[in-house]
Every structure is written in structure tokens, then in C-alpha cells.
Length: 341
Image (cartoon, rainbow, N blue to C red; front, side, top):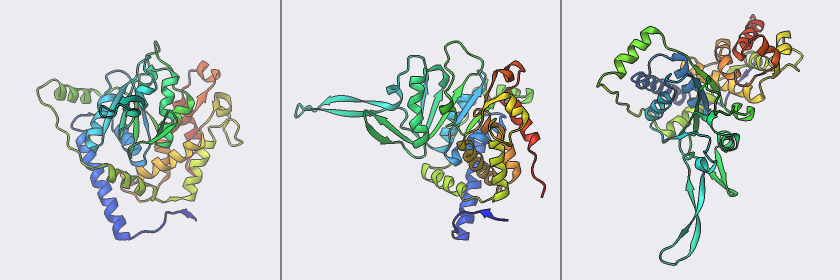
């Protein structure tokens, strides 16, 4: 059996880096738990996004702590955090920054000066991203893919690491603009925040309706997060597991010969190649976070829904039958079980 393996490095150094990775992960979770109650899968997916250098779209009802989670994570990581409240009148220059003319008081000469926008941060919270028109949404396309920003023909490199953690409300339709597929595809996850259990809501009351307040401490640095991203890419994945990931993604495309009948019936467009890349990368991070040094089929299947749900475009037949992307992906996982050894 062949295996896709990274270049070899010193074993002792590798063990130390893995141990530090696990230590930082535990510290981050402990810090986040001081503020955020429940939502274990959501916290894990946001952490995976950070460890692979991806972006995360948080979809949830009002009051489900979407914004609080992002702010808490940024404070815990010790990164530069900035927030943009997306509104219908927001302009692209409000995100990227703009050139202004400044006059030198001593010489009287005027020159163009670039004033950085809030996009120049490590963690960018795009709050209610679907409230701004496509013209402004498109200001994030280049930065999310290439980590750069272009203003008046000048290219600027964004700080590293760079993450966009966006939020949107699924039930408000008035005054909202659906994200275009090209932008949705740039998000690693579309993470759903649901209601908490009764016990967790009781904990929220005890934490937020008294005079007590949590104090968060940074547990890592930007340089260390970049080293963790390299470490995640070194996690090996066996060829059969990588092939299974490819088959899952290709099966979402109605034009593929291996696509099940229900995909041909309900799906207009399936996942892109970026979906395969993200599924494998996220599975590597999940494996390392769970104390394993290789990817398993469980990693692939556990992350299939949040990675694929925003990359599948359903047709009117699916809407008529009241089927969602999650329903289709779960049927696909049943139709594509783990291959027997």
C-alpha cells in the first residue's frame, strides 16, 4: 500500500512540535471554555480552520454566540483582531483601505498615502457578511484566496496568519444578499451553531447574569500558529483514504459517472477541487488534534458535512421535496460507506 508522505525531518524535533501542538490546543480550549458554553463541534471546526490556515463561515440564529466565539478565539490566540460590521452601504474601500492625498507641511508637496483598512489583521470578523451587496463582498475574494489586497493597482500583502471568520443569520431575508458561490467556496467550513441544551443554557445564565467576568490570556503567537500550519501538512494520509475523499467529492457532481441517482435528481452543481483539498487538509488537522499521526476514514466522514454543505447547489426538485444540503450529504455518506479492508 502506497502512502502520501511528507519529507522526513528530525524525529526528536517532530515529537517536540507535536507535543507543543497538543499543549496549545488544550490551552486554547480551556481559555475558550471560560466564555463559551457547549458547541464542541463548532469550537473544533474553528480550531481546525486556524490550524490549516482556512476561513470559516459561522451560520446561526441571533444570540447563539457567533460574534463572541470569534472575539474570544482571537484574544486567546494573541493575534491582531479587527471587526467589520457589514451593512448595505458599506463600500469596498471601507474594507481594504484607500489612498489619500497628504501634504508635507515642510515642503508643501502632496503625495498619495495608503491608509490600511480593517482587512490588515490576523483575525478578521466579517459580522453579518450577507448584509452587504456583492460589490462589497467581492472585496474579500482576493484576500481570502491569495492573502493579498489590491488598491489602485498596488498590491499589498496581508499579515500572516490571516483568517476570515464570517457570521450570517439564516432566517433574516430582508435586506440581505446571498453570498456568491465563488466566495462560499473559499470558506473551509460552513459551521452551523444550533441552540444549546437546557443544562448548557443554565450554565450561560450563571456565567453572564452575575458580576463575574472571565479574563482571557494569550496562549500562543502568530509565528507558532504558522509553524502549526506546516506541521498539519506533514501528517501522512494513506492513498486509499485519499482516494475515498476524492470519490466522496466527485460523487456530489451530477455529471460524474459514479454519482448516485439521488445526486443526479437533486443536485445542479457539486463540490469543486478546492473541496477535496480542504477535506484532506482539515482531516489532517483533526487527526493531529485527536492525538493521531495519520488520517483515518472517520476524519474524512466526520468533516464531510461542514465542508461540503456550502459547495453543493440543489435544484428545484430538492426544494420541492424539502431536502437540504445536509440531507443530501448524509445520504451520500450512507451510499458511500468505508471500503472494507
